[in-house]
Length: 461
Image (cartoon, rainbow, N blue to C red; front, side):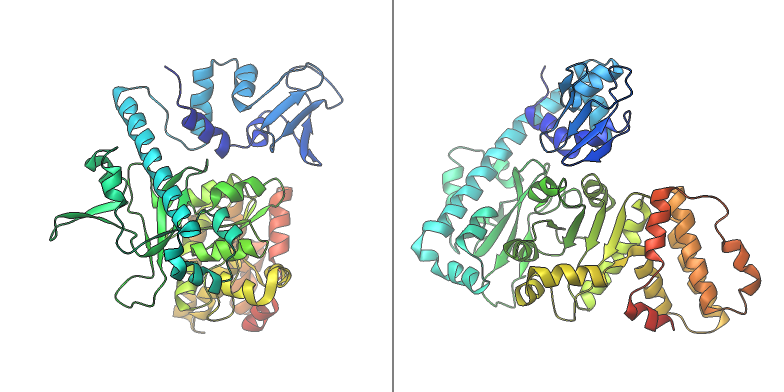
Protein backbone atom coordinates (compact mmCIF):
# COMPACT_ATOMS: atom_id res chain seq x y z
CA UNK A 1 0.00 0.00 0.00
CA UNK A 2 1.05 3.56 -0.63
CA UNK A 3 1.44 6.19 2.05
CA UNK A 4 -1.29 8.85 1.79
CA UNK A 5 -0.03 11.95 0.01
CA UNK A 6 -1.20 14.14 2.93
CA UNK A 7 0.92 12.13 5.38
CA UNK A 8 4.08 12.51 3.28
CA UNK A 9 3.35 16.19 2.63
CA UNK A 10 3.01 16.86 6.35
CA UNK A 11 6.38 15.25 7.05
CA UNK A 12 8.00 17.43 4.37
CA UNK A 13 6.22 20.50 5.71
CA UNK A 14 7.30 19.91 9.30
CA UNK A 15 10.96 19.28 8.44
CA UNK A 16 13.22 21.68 6.61
CA UNK A 17 15.70 19.97 4.31
CA UNK A 18 18.53 21.74 6.17
CA UNK A 19 17.26 20.33 9.48
CA UNK A 20 17.43 16.77 8.16
CA UNK A 21 20.71 17.16 6.29
CA UNK A 22 22.48 18.96 9.15
CA UNK A 23 22.18 15.79 11.26
CA UNK A 24 24.99 14.32 9.12
CA UNK A 25 26.47 17.22 7.12
CA UNK A 26 27.98 20.41 8.56
CA UNK A 27 26.15 23.23 6.72
CA UNK A 28 26.93 26.93 6.40
CA UNK A 29 24.44 29.58 5.28
CA UNK A 30 25.25 31.23 1.96
CA UNK A 31 22.57 33.56 0.69
CA UNK A 32 19.29 31.67 0.40
CA UNK A 33 21.06 28.31 0.45
CA UNK A 34 23.24 26.18 2.71
CA UNK A 35 26.52 24.65 1.57
CA UNK A 36 28.65 21.80 2.88
CA UNK A 37 30.97 18.94 1.97
CA UNK A 38 29.32 16.23 -0.06
CA UNK A 39 28.15 13.17 1.94
CA UNK A 40 28.44 11.15 -1.28
CA UNK A 41 32.14 11.80 -2.05
CA UNK A 42 35.32 12.76 -0.20
CA UNK A 43 36.11 16.38 -1.03
CA UNK A 44 37.87 19.41 0.40
CA UNK A 45 35.84 22.11 -1.37
CA UNK A 46 32.09 22.20 -0.62
CA UNK A 47 29.95 21.25 -3.62
CA UNK A 48 26.81 20.21 -1.75
CA UNK A 49 23.89 22.68 -1.52
CA UNK A 50 20.56 22.70 0.32
CA UNK A 51 17.62 24.94 -0.54
CA UNK A 52 14.83 24.96 2.05
CA UNK A 53 12.59 27.15 -0.06
CA UNK A 54 12.63 24.69 -2.97
CA UNK A 55 12.75 21.69 -0.59
CA UNK A 56 15.69 19.88 -2.22
CA UNK A 57 19.43 19.24 -2.00
CA UNK A 58 21.94 18.98 -4.86
CA UNK A 59 25.49 17.67 -5.02
CA UNK A 60 27.47 19.18 -7.90
CA UNK A 61 30.28 16.64 -7.48
CA UNK A 62 28.09 13.57 -7.97
CA UNK A 63 24.85 15.00 -9.42
CA UNK A 64 22.91 13.45 -6.53
CA UNK A 65 19.78 15.44 -5.70
CA UNK A 66 16.32 15.04 -4.21
CA UNK A 67 14.10 15.68 -1.18
CA UNK A 68 14.42 14.61 2.46
CA UNK A 69 13.20 11.07 1.73
CA UNK A 70 15.82 10.65 -0.99
CA UNK A 71 18.54 11.96 1.30
CA UNK A 72 17.75 9.55 4.14
CA UNK A 73 17.46 6.58 1.79
CA UNK A 74 20.80 7.33 0.10
CA UNK A 75 22.86 8.30 3.15
CA UNK A 76 21.48 5.66 5.54
CA UNK A 77 20.83 2.90 2.99
CA UNK A 78 17.14 2.66 3.92
CA UNK A 79 14.11 1.65 1.89
CA UNK A 80 11.42 4.26 1.31
CA UNK A 81 9.11 2.94 4.04
CA UNK A 82 11.97 2.92 6.55
CA UNK A 83 12.91 6.49 5.59
CA UNK A 84 9.30 7.60 6.09
CA UNK A 85 9.19 6.04 9.57
CA UNK A 86 12.51 7.67 10.50
CA UNK A 87 11.44 11.13 9.31
CA UNK A 88 7.95 10.85 10.83
CA UNK A 89 9.56 10.21 14.20
CA UNK A 90 11.90 13.19 13.70
CA UNK A 91 8.86 15.33 12.83
CA UNK A 92 7.02 14.24 15.98
CA UNK A 93 4.33 12.35 14.04
CA UNK A 94 2.73 8.99 14.70
CA UNK A 95 3.91 6.17 12.40
CA UNK A 96 1.51 5.12 9.65
CA UNK A 97 0.75 1.43 10.20
CA UNK A 98 -1.44 0.44 7.21
CA UNK A 99 -3.87 -1.36 9.49
CA UNK A 100 -7.60 -1.65 8.88
CA UNK A 101 -7.98 1.15 11.40
CA UNK A 102 -5.66 3.37 9.34
CA UNK A 103 -7.66 2.65 6.20
CA UNK A 104 -10.88 3.66 7.94
CA UNK A 105 -9.20 6.77 9.32
CA UNK A 106 -8.00 7.71 5.83
CA UNK A 107 -11.54 7.36 4.48
CA UNK A 108 -12.89 9.53 7.30
CA UNK A 109 -10.16 12.09 6.69
CA UNK A 110 -11.08 12.42 3.01
CA UNK A 111 -14.74 13.01 3.93
CA UNK A 112 -13.79 15.45 6.71
CA UNK A 113 -11.51 17.34 4.32
CA UNK A 114 -14.20 17.51 1.66
CA UNK A 115 -16.83 18.86 4.09
CA UNK A 116 -14.52 21.56 5.45
CA UNK A 117 -13.41 22.68 2.00
CA UNK A 118 -17.03 23.01 0.83
CA UNK A 119 -18.13 24.74 4.03
CA UNK A 120 -15.29 27.29 4.04
CA UNK A 121 -15.61 28.02 0.32
CA UNK A 122 -19.38 28.46 0.53
CA UNK A 123 -19.39 30.95 3.40
CA UNK A 124 -16.33 32.82 2.12
CA UNK A 125 -18.11 33.36 -1.21
CA UNK A 126 -21.27 34.37 0.64
CA UNK A 127 -19.38 37.10 2.50
CA UNK A 128 -17.73 38.36 -0.68
CA UNK A 129 -20.72 38.22 -3.04
CA UNK A 130 -24.02 38.15 -1.12
CA UNK A 131 -25.38 41.69 -0.78
CA UNK A 132 -27.54 40.60 2.17
CA UNK A 133 -24.41 40.34 4.32
CA UNK A 134 -23.64 44.08 4.23
CA UNK A 135 -23.59 44.12 8.06
CA UNK A 136 -20.65 41.70 8.13
CA UNK A 137 -18.82 43.60 5.41
CA UNK A 138 -19.43 46.86 7.25
CA UNK A 139 -17.95 45.34 10.43
CA UNK A 140 -14.81 44.30 8.54
CA UNK A 141 -14.57 47.73 6.93
CA UNK A 142 -14.71 49.34 10.38
CA UNK A 143 -11.84 47.04 11.39
CA UNK A 144 -9.92 48.39 8.36
CA UNK A 145 -9.91 45.02 6.59
CA UNK A 146 -9.87 45.12 2.79
CA UNK A 147 -11.29 42.58 0.37
CA UNK A 148 -7.73 41.33 -0.19
CA UNK A 149 -7.27 40.73 3.56
CA UNK A 150 -10.54 38.76 3.65
CA UNK A 151 -9.49 36.66 0.67
CA UNK A 152 -6.00 35.99 2.02
CA UNK A 153 -7.36 34.40 5.20
CA UNK A 154 -10.52 33.11 3.49
CA UNK A 155 -12.73 34.72 6.13
CA UNK A 156 -16.42 33.87 5.80
CA UNK A 157 -19.75 34.76 7.35
CA UNK A 158 -22.46 32.33 8.49
CA UNK A 159 -25.91 33.90 8.47
CA UNK A 160 -28.16 33.67 11.53
CA UNK A 161 -30.56 31.13 10.01
CA UNK A 162 -28.41 28.98 7.72
CA UNK A 163 -29.64 25.84 5.97
CA UNK A 164 -26.48 24.28 4.59
CA UNK A 165 -26.97 21.16 6.72
CA UNK A 166 -29.91 20.17 4.52
CA UNK A 167 -27.66 20.39 1.46
CA UNK A 168 -24.80 18.50 3.06
CA UNK A 169 -26.87 15.57 4.36
CA UNK A 170 -27.64 14.61 0.76
CA UNK A 171 -23.92 13.93 0.26
CA UNK A 172 -22.68 12.94 3.73
CA UNK A 173 -24.05 10.93 6.63
CA UNK A 174 -25.43 12.77 9.66
CA UNK A 175 -22.82 11.09 11.86
CA UNK A 176 -19.97 12.32 9.65
CA UNK A 177 -21.36 15.87 9.65
CA UNK A 178 -21.68 15.89 13.44
CA UNK A 179 -18.12 14.54 13.83
CA UNK A 180 -16.75 17.63 12.06
CA UNK A 181 -17.95 19.84 14.92
CA UNK A 182 -19.61 22.24 12.46
CA UNK A 183 -23.08 21.13 13.55
CA UNK A 184 -24.76 19.88 16.72
CA UNK A 185 -28.18 18.52 17.64
CA UNK A 186 -30.55 20.87 19.47
CA UNK A 187 -32.08 18.39 21.91
CA UNK A 188 -35.19 20.49 22.56
CA UNK A 189 -36.09 21.29 18.98
CA UNK A 190 -34.68 18.01 17.61
CA UNK A 191 -32.94 19.82 14.76
CA UNK A 192 -29.32 20.12 13.66
CA UNK A 193 -27.85 23.58 14.25
CA UNK A 194 -24.78 25.26 12.79
CA UNK A 195 -22.33 26.04 15.57
CA UNK A 196 -21.06 29.26 13.95
CA UNK A 197 -24.37 30.81 12.90
CA UNK A 198 -24.34 34.62 13.02
CA UNK A 199 -20.54 34.76 13.17
CA UNK A 200 -17.55 35.63 11.04
CA UNK A 201 -15.53 32.45 10.56
CA UNK A 202 -11.74 32.13 10.41
CA UNK A 203 -10.56 28.84 8.90
CA UNK A 204 -7.94 27.08 11.03
CA UNK A 205 -5.69 25.17 8.65
CA UNK A 206 -3.33 22.32 9.35
CA UNK A 207 0.33 22.78 8.55
CA UNK A 208 -0.20 21.91 4.86
CA UNK A 209 -3.00 24.47 4.41
CA UNK A 210 -6.08 22.25 4.69
CA UNK A 211 -8.92 23.71 6.83
CA UNK A 212 -9.60 21.40 9.79
CA UNK A 213 -11.46 23.69 12.22
CA UNK A 214 -12.95 27.17 12.58
CA UNK A 215 -12.83 30.16 14.88
CA UNK A 216 -15.96 32.28 15.03
CA UNK A 217 -16.56 35.90 16.11
CA UNK A 218 -19.84 37.68 16.69
CA UNK A 219 -20.23 41.05 14.96
CA UNK A 220 -22.86 42.43 17.35
CA UNK A 221 -22.45 43.46 20.98
CA UNK A 222 -24.45 40.69 22.63
CA UNK A 223 -23.50 40.05 26.26
CA UNK A 224 -25.17 36.64 26.36
CA UNK A 225 -22.91 35.26 23.62
CA UNK A 226 -19.18 34.56 23.81
CA UNK A 227 -17.26 36.97 21.59
CA UNK A 228 -15.13 34.12 20.19
CA UNK A 229 -15.76 30.40 19.93
CA UNK A 230 -13.63 27.63 18.42
CA UNK A 231 -14.42 24.28 16.89
CA UNK A 232 -14.56 21.45 19.42
CA UNK A 233 -11.76 18.92 19.25
CA UNK A 234 -12.32 16.21 16.66
CA UNK A 235 -10.48 13.18 15.31
CA UNK A 236 -8.47 15.53 13.06
CA UNK A 237 -8.26 18.68 15.16
CA UNK A 238 -6.47 19.02 18.50
CA UNK A 239 -6.24 22.58 19.81
CA UNK A 240 -2.91 22.04 21.54
CA UNK A 241 -1.27 20.71 18.37
CA UNK A 242 -2.28 23.47 15.95
CA UNK A 243 -1.73 27.21 15.51
CA UNK A 244 -3.73 29.70 13.47
CA UNK A 245 -1.84 30.88 10.35
CA UNK A 246 1.09 28.48 10.79
CA UNK A 247 0.57 27.19 7.24
CA UNK A 248 1.35 30.66 5.85
CA UNK A 249 3.82 31.93 8.47
CA UNK A 250 6.12 28.88 8.23
CA UNK A 251 6.91 29.78 4.61
CA UNK A 252 8.70 32.90 5.88
CA UNK A 253 11.18 30.94 8.02
CA UNK A 254 13.86 31.25 5.33
CA UNK A 255 13.59 35.05 5.48
CA UNK A 256 13.02 35.83 9.18
CA UNK A 257 14.23 34.02 12.30
CA UNK A 258 11.43 35.09 14.65
CA UNK A 259 7.69 34.51 14.95
CA UNK A 260 5.08 36.47 16.92
CA UNK A 261 2.72 34.32 18.96
CA UNK A 262 -0.46 36.29 19.69
CA UNK A 263 -3.82 35.51 21.29
CA UNK A 264 -6.44 36.05 18.60
CA UNK A 265 -7.30 35.65 14.94
CA UNK A 266 -7.83 39.38 14.50
CA UNK A 267 -4.36 40.03 15.93
CA UNK A 268 -2.84 37.84 13.21
CA UNK A 269 -4.97 39.45 10.51
CA UNK A 270 -4.28 42.96 11.85
CA UNK A 271 -0.52 42.42 11.88
CA UNK A 272 -0.66 40.93 8.38
CA UNK A 273 -2.53 43.85 6.87
CA UNK A 274 0.22 46.10 8.26
CA UNK A 275 2.94 44.02 6.61
CA UNK A 276 3.86 41.72 9.51
CA UNK A 277 3.08 38.21 8.28
CA UNK A 278 5.25 36.20 10.68
CA UNK A 279 2.52 35.78 13.29
CA UNK A 280 0.44 32.89 14.59
CA UNK A 281 -2.22 32.57 17.29
CA UNK A 282 -2.93 29.85 19.81
CA UNK A 283 -6.48 28.57 19.83
CA UNK A 284 -8.17 29.70 23.00
CA UNK A 285 -6.16 27.41 25.26
CA UNK A 286 -2.94 27.71 27.25
CA UNK A 287 0.26 27.38 25.25
CA UNK A 288 1.35 23.75 24.95
CA UNK A 289 4.72 22.01 24.66
CA UNK A 290 3.65 20.69 21.25
CA UNK A 291 3.01 24.20 19.93
CA UNK A 292 6.44 25.37 21.11
CA UNK A 293 8.14 22.35 19.51
CA UNK A 294 6.32 22.97 16.22
CA UNK A 295 7.37 26.63 16.14
CA UNK A 296 10.95 25.66 17.02
CA UNK A 297 11.08 23.56 13.87
CA UNK A 298 10.81 26.74 11.80
CA UNK A 299 11.94 29.72 13.89
CA UNK A 300 14.80 30.51 16.29
CA UNK A 301 12.98 33.13 18.37
CA UNK A 302 9.36 32.85 19.53
CA UNK A 303 8.08 36.27 20.64
CA UNK A 304 4.98 35.86 22.79
CA UNK A 305 2.88 39.02 22.55
CA UNK A 306 -0.39 38.82 24.45
CA UNK A 307 -2.87 41.60 25.24
CA UNK A 308 -1.68 44.44 27.47
CA UNK A 309 -4.11 43.80 30.32
CA UNK A 310 -4.20 41.64 33.44
CA UNK A 311 -5.56 38.56 31.68
CA UNK A 312 -2.92 38.93 28.97
CA UNK A 313 -0.19 39.13 31.62
CA UNK A 314 -1.49 36.03 33.40
CA UNK A 315 -1.64 34.15 30.11
CA UNK A 316 1.95 35.20 29.38
CA UNK A 317 3.10 33.95 32.79
CA UNK A 318 1.44 30.58 32.22
CA UNK A 319 3.07 30.43 28.81
CA UNK A 320 6.48 31.27 30.29
CA UNK A 321 6.36 28.63 33.02
CA UNK A 322 5.11 26.04 30.55
CA UNK A 323 7.44 26.77 27.64
CA UNK A 324 10.74 27.39 29.46
CA UNK A 325 11.23 23.63 29.70
CA UNK A 326 11.65 23.50 25.90
CA UNK A 327 14.49 26.09 25.74
CA UNK A 328 17.51 25.06 23.70
CA UNK A 329 20.91 26.77 23.21
CA UNK A 330 20.12 27.75 19.63
CA UNK A 331 16.52 28.81 20.34
CA UNK A 332 14.97 31.73 22.22
CA UNK A 333 11.59 32.48 23.73
CA UNK A 334 10.87 36.15 24.36
CA UNK A 335 7.95 38.20 25.70
CA UNK A 336 6.61 41.50 24.45
CA UNK A 337 4.23 43.42 26.70
CA UNK A 338 2.08 46.06 25.04
CA UNK A 339 0.74 49.17 26.80
CA UNK A 340 -2.36 48.59 28.93
CA UNK A 341 -5.62 47.97 27.03
CA UNK A 342 -3.74 47.44 23.76
CA UNK A 343 -3.59 44.25 21.72
CA UNK A 344 -1.31 43.62 18.70
CA UNK A 345 -4.11 44.51 16.28
CA UNK A 346 -4.97 47.85 17.91
CA UNK A 347 -1.32 48.78 18.56
CA UNK A 348 -0.09 48.18 15.01
CA UNK A 349 -3.15 49.95 13.53
CA UNK A 350 -2.40 53.07 15.61
CA UNK A 351 1.38 53.07 15.32
CA UNK A 352 2.26 51.20 12.12
CA UNK A 353 4.70 48.45 11.22
CA UNK A 354 7.96 50.35 11.77
CA UNK A 355 6.96 51.42 15.28
CA UNK A 356 5.83 47.90 16.20
CA UNK A 357 9.15 46.42 15.06
CA UNK A 358 11.13 49.09 16.90
CA UNK A 359 8.99 48.56 20.02
CA UNK A 360 9.81 44.86 19.78
CA UNK A 361 13.56 45.54 19.61
CA UNK A 362 13.49 47.92 22.56
CA UNK A 363 11.01 46.15 24.83
CA UNK A 364 11.09 42.39 24.42
CA UNK A 365 12.30 40.35 27.39
CA UNK A 366 13.92 36.92 27.33
CA UNK A 367 11.86 34.28 29.08
CA UNK A 368 14.22 33.95 32.07
CA UNK A 369 14.23 37.74 32.56
CA UNK A 370 10.44 37.80 32.60
CA UNK A 371 10.14 34.94 35.09
CA UNK A 372 12.72 36.49 37.43
CA UNK A 373 11.04 39.89 37.20
CA UNK A 374 7.61 38.44 37.96
CA UNK A 375 8.64 36.53 41.08
CA UNK A 376 10.84 39.40 42.26
CA UNK A 377 7.69 41.57 42.38
CA UNK A 378 6.01 38.99 44.63
CA UNK A 379 8.93 38.91 47.08
CA UNK A 380 9.40 40.84 50.32
CA UNK A 381 12.77 41.67 51.83
CA UNK A 382 12.82 39.05 54.59
CA UNK A 383 14.49 35.63 54.89
CA UNK A 384 11.30 33.59 54.54
CA UNK A 385 10.13 35.39 51.41
CA UNK A 386 13.61 35.29 49.83
CA UNK A 387 13.84 31.55 50.57
CA UNK A 388 10.54 30.93 48.79
CA UNK A 389 11.74 33.16 45.93
CA UNK A 390 14.94 31.16 45.46
CA UNK A 391 13.16 27.82 45.84
CA UNK A 392 10.60 28.77 43.18
CA UNK A 393 13.26 29.87 40.71
CA UNK A 394 15.29 26.70 41.27
CA UNK A 395 12.17 24.63 40.62
CA UNK A 396 11.48 26.55 37.39
CA UNK A 397 15.07 26.10 36.19
CA UNK A 398 14.99 22.39 36.97
CA UNK A 399 12.08 21.84 34.57
CA UNK A 400 14.32 22.74 31.62
CA UNK A 401 15.13 19.65 29.57
CA UNK A 402 18.40 20.84 28.00
CA UNK A 403 21.24 20.53 30.54
CA UNK A 404 23.26 23.45 29.14
CA UNK A 405 20.35 25.90 29.27
CA UNK A 406 19.29 24.58 32.68
CA UNK A 407 22.78 25.32 34.02
CA UNK A 408 22.92 28.89 32.74
CA UNK A 409 19.35 29.82 33.61
CA UNK A 410 19.90 28.63 37.18
CA UNK A 411 23.17 30.57 37.30
CA UNK A 412 21.39 33.70 36.02
CA UNK A 413 18.71 33.37 38.73
CA UNK A 414 21.24 32.83 41.52
CA UNK A 415 23.48 35.71 40.43
CA UNK A 416 20.47 38.05 40.35
CA UNK A 417 19.46 36.90 43.84
CA UNK A 418 23.03 37.51 44.99
CA UNK A 419 22.79 41.10 43.73
CA UNK A 420 19.65 41.58 45.81
CA UNK A 421 21.29 40.14 48.95
CA UNK A 422 24.96 41.18 48.64
CA UNK A 423 25.91 40.58 52.30
CA UNK A 424 24.35 37.15 52.79
CA UNK A 425 25.59 35.94 49.40
CA UNK A 426 29.10 37.43 49.45
CA UNK A 427 30.74 34.15 50.48
CA UNK A 428 28.81 32.13 47.93
CA UNK A 429 29.38 34.30 44.89
CA UNK A 430 32.30 32.19 43.74
CA UNK A 431 30.02 29.21 43.31
CA UNK A 432 28.13 31.09 40.62
CA UNK A 433 31.17 31.59 38.37
CA UNK A 434 31.19 29.73 35.07
CA UNK A 435 33.45 26.72 35.75
CA UNK A 436 33.60 25.48 32.17
CA UNK A 437 33.75 26.97 28.72
CA UNK A 438 30.23 27.27 27.29
CA UNK A 439 29.03 26.46 23.83
CA UNK A 440 29.25 29.52 21.56
CA UNK A 441 25.48 29.60 20.96
CA UNK A 442 24.75 29.26 24.66
CA UNK A 443 27.31 31.90 25.63
CA UNK A 444 25.93 34.33 23.02
CA UNK A 445 22.38 33.75 24.26
CA UNK A 446 23.23 34.58 27.86
CA UNK A 447 25.62 37.41 27.16
CA UNK A 448 22.78 39.13 25.32
CA UNK A 449 20.34 38.50 28.16
CA UNK A 450 22.47 39.85 30.98
CA UNK A 451 21.47 43.46 30.29
CA UNK A 452 17.88 44.20 31.30
CA UNK A 453 15.71 46.92 29.80
CA UNK A 454 15.59 50.33 31.44
CA UNK A 455 12.30 49.48 33.10
CA UNK A 456 13.73 46.28 34.56
CA UNK A 457 16.87 48.01 35.82
CA UNK A 458 14.80 50.59 37.69
CA UNK A 459 12.83 47.78 39.21
CA UNK A 460 15.92 46.06 40.58
CA UNK A 461 17.71 49.22 41.78
